[in-house]
Length: 179
Image (cartoon, rainbow, N blue to C red; front, side, top):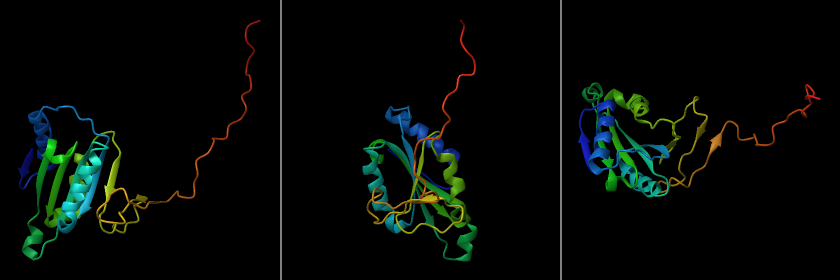
């Protein structure tokens, strides 16, 4: 089931997700993660298909953010958000929301995505192209090829840290029992 929303808000998108789940008869959410794909129009189709295939193994909510850049000064002032909500067979085994941002909303896409994240579920962000440069970024997983979210490289600030046993002191009795 596909629901198209023009000039919408995150609240209306959430309502469309709930309504879509009710219409197909699955009101419960059994998603294991939220996948956010930040891409352009050129790579969007292949990215969505790869995410739908991955959702058969890991049911997830997929949020595809397509940043549409304005070509004229008039377009830069016309900020709006269009969304396509896919639930059921059109979205693999999860939910897919395709977000197209226009104007100044493009610079603040994180404000659009944040209310759509699943609560208490991990978030995976995938850039089919190059990851943006940011000092706030601590971990990232850009794709080596545009066709596969599983073919990734990972950098983290803590990559030298290796897990091991936690050092503890030997237990010493503090009191003797009765008798």
